Amino acid sequence: TADRIVAGVPANTQRSYREAWQQFTQWCTAAGRQPLPTTGATLADFTAYLCDHNKAPTTIAHRMAVISAQNQAHGYPALGKEVTKGANLALRGYRRVRADTAQRTKEAPPITRDRLRAMSAACNLGTLAGKRDRLLLVIGWALAGRRSELAALRVEEVRVTDDELEILIRSSKTDKDSDGETVGVPAGEHVDTDPVGLLNNWLTALGDVGGDPTAGYLFRATTRHDRLYRYGRLSGEATNAVVRRAAVRAGLPNAHLYTAHSLRAGFATQASADGIPMSIWA
Image 1 (cartoon, rainbow, N blue to C red):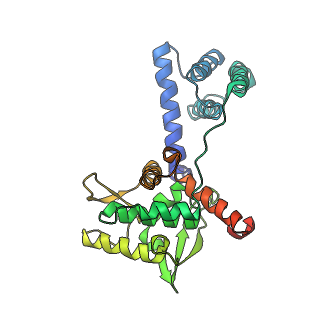
Image 2 (image 1 turned 180 degrees about the vertical axis):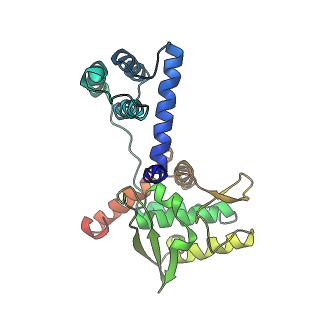
Image 3 (image 1 turned 90 degrees about the horizontal axis):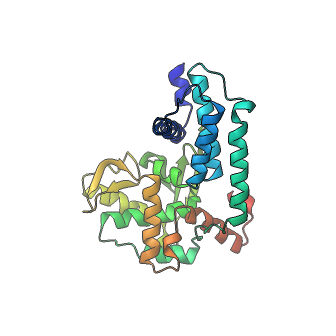
């Protein structure tokens, strides 16, 4: 039962919990504090420490929640109002200061259809990575996919039927129970943005270098020498890097701001410009 409970928590969430608790215990060691049971003074001082290091308020609130959960996991009571009062007041004041001094966050620019074509055309098709990157850009845009969904996509979950792709998204941020959803991606008219043709090119290239084009992660990691990490996949951060490099190669303004979210935002922007109702693709 314990194993199944753990399996019910997404891997990214488990990792963030471990990292949060490790940060707290390391701070306690350096400050000469006892992590368990956590006192109000210790929690307030740790919160102030995070504020001093300009951590986002949501990050600080997450750290507090993890500390409370760890107290319960070790047989101590959850941190009640009296214990968290000082920390919450410190966080409230920090939020006010940030609100007064904050500048508008630079958002990832949306990738419109024209930008997508420019970025795809700029990929180096003489390399394995270039073929992969072009497919990732086009599928990511057509799916309005999150970077985690793209990184987790497997070859077995992509089928070519009647000149379109049927892509199974097994799990997503909004699909907590992993019911899965099949999304149709039609073939494109332009060679640089045709997902069917680009998929065939990428799978052929995989087979040519000894990779399995019938199973495994769709977007495989490559070395700096353009060799295949046979069992590796692109991470979420590596997916961001693919988009950013393509924007730089295409000479787009503010290319350094582009991330994988630009694909998702760009699809929505283009859909709106084309007069497609949000309910059709959301």
